[in-house]
Image 1: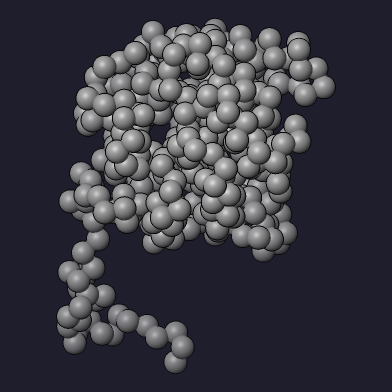
Image 2 (image 1 turned 135 degrees about the vertical axis):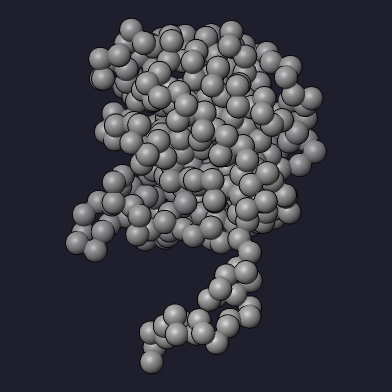
Length: 345
Ligand SMILES: [Zn+2]
């Protein structure tokens, strides 16, 4: 394990909220470095500078954790894009890039594993062996390259997440295990999300909660209930999209013409930075310990969330100063009033 930083994840959580930031795959797709569809992080090998820059932007915006971009860098997915031979190199390189940028600040490095698409609830015994081997392989390389803890995320099945947890605990690393809440109330193997988090906590997860799929409005009510049933740390990393009771996940959002907005037409549903700042404050108020963002996340949200929690981060140097804007500022000069349009009149 790396001893680069003065305190590990558990010590940091013990003394206050830890802020995270994710959504690397989504953001690097928007920037033209990852193919939507397979969503394999080929960018790690093809354009490492692009990955480092995004790490750096999240670091400057207040993220205390650099999450190694190994999401979907597993055997099953690399097969889809014909890069199975790059598996080890991609995983090792992703952790190296995260470490390199973490050292620019005082950030931790998280190894990252996710749902494998290989877990089969109808064939638990056989599929569990495959899943376990994939996790052991990925995290084995990650540990050799140096990580502080592991984030196992977007878990659709409690069963699969428990395998991840076991593998992380065998490595004697702190475990953060979060579920995808794609369905209304239950994991795909039939466990209520709240109950599933309790089971994960009872099995020794250090941090449990939800990430991805839901925006602040539809994630917070679930998180609030999770907070009441577990005594371990709780994580919430929503997507910055305006989901609601009727459309609780970003997969359920529909465009004006009725098409599924996910994943390529989501822009009209983006939250603004103030909404994400409000989320951070609410999450903090209900006792969430690890507060972050997932797909759709970008540095301006991360900074707004950090500042909402009373922090000043490196990127705060360039935080808005609207009073200095020539038209919108507090002292609008007469000559600029013509630029202000009142659409109501
Ligand atoms: Zn996500």
